[in-house]
Amino acid sequence: MVAPALVDEFAAMGDVKVSAAPVTSNIMFGMIMAAPQHGIVLVSPAATNPAISTYDDWSFRVQPGDDYQGGAIARFFAQQMGIRTAAVLVNDRYGYGVSIYESFRDEFQKRGGRIVDVEHFEWNLDDGSDYDFGEIIDRMWRSDPELVLLSGYAKEAVPFIRQAHDKGWHPKYCGGASGLTPQGLECAGDGQADSY
Image 1 (cartoon, rainbow, N blue to C red):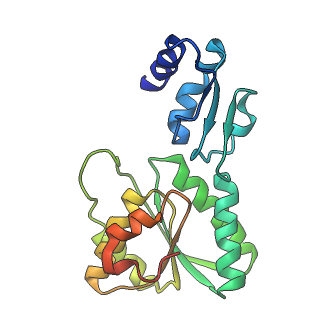
Image 2 (cartoon, rainbow, N blue to C red):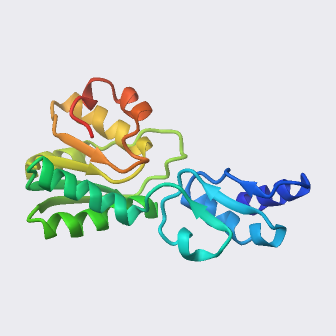
């Protein structure tokens, strides 16, 4: 596994006491086991899995947890925007999107919102190709949501938005901190006009 080897590299440098290197929760969990053995504190600027904060005294995250992000998204759209229906895209391969979806669903329904479609799929984001969302987009479009939660990463959100735009569908989009980043939205081109 690469992550523990990274901690070993830091330890070999001799005077590394804190690492801000782990970006994703998956990488962070890979590093967590090795870091205390070397006396290295891990601080992730982007990991969002809530379990990181309670794992040990050596591991910290800066971003709000998935559980908070999904709930905050739901509160904003239900209360501030008056959204009543939503569809959700969930990549089951990664815990991040699943956690965002679950916390969004619970809070959105608590506030009177209705999930009209949930589309689960599995795609390895590192395989270098865009996923063909055509059939998923068609099903979601037919469910007529006011909002589409793209619960995963920008690598999923960008091709989804681009492909929906090319089909002529222009719903409101939202996502967590790793989903609809400004850089990712730029890549989505004209399709990103109503994204939050």
